[in-house]
Length: 344
Image 1 (cartoon, rainbow, N blue to C red):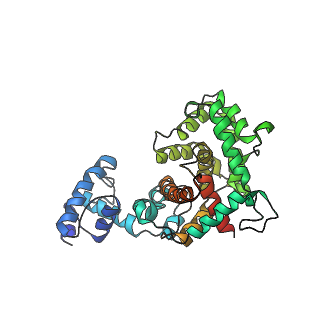
Image 2: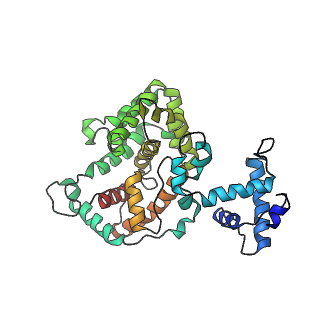
Image 3: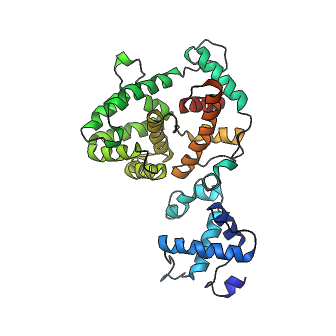
């Protein structure tokens, strides 16, 4: 109340401000003065990134009142409200809030529960050949999954040796796409694995459109794919660039699709190039898995690069658990574990 009575020209140490600042890594403590100091520190960043956003408008607010409204938006907007605003005039405001609950909390705060028995079953299934055999009665039976490991070996042994993934040229693009979609028979790798990783019909159509666009625009494709594979760049920035280049493929009037299909495509490409770090993001299965086997209340749909980053870090913990038990594992193991656990 004091802050508001000063006409918003002094920091307003609200409950929302304290919570959001803590999420963003500010050590604000519990007393009013500490929260006020945190807001003042945050205001420097806010002013450099945003400025005085409402200045000159009919709804102009003093800067600290504006920042207080920002804190309230971030802290109190729920998932249903966000999802309802992902299209339309307010999408630029609400889209960055997707996944806020998982990507703002520290990764260490997420704990896995009940996954050890799943891991043991997965290792036994994998090492006994259950993922090769439709007739097996083993957990995971009726699932042939071994093609994913075969393609990983092909990608690592052949594709990465044939192309400099972080410096693709326009001339490389057609050959690169041919290599990942139609591996030569001699390498015993299944064809069109990225499309298979996409899942349902509409996701596959998105993949087909991405491939067609890359073939028609090889210079732009070479740039965005080279950046996607460049692990020296921020994964969030790389995924955002991928989204900006290809998002028009999901918003055509005749074929409107979820932007989440672009995230699945990008991470499918990453998983085979960097199988120790990245995992194909399949929203529905991962959402169910995180709800059932972790302390997270689930994931948000859509294209959210920051949420993917936190998901991949959490999945690396599962990878470590599998590797500790078996000595050899990759994110293919984690993806298969999540896939089968959800399917059964």
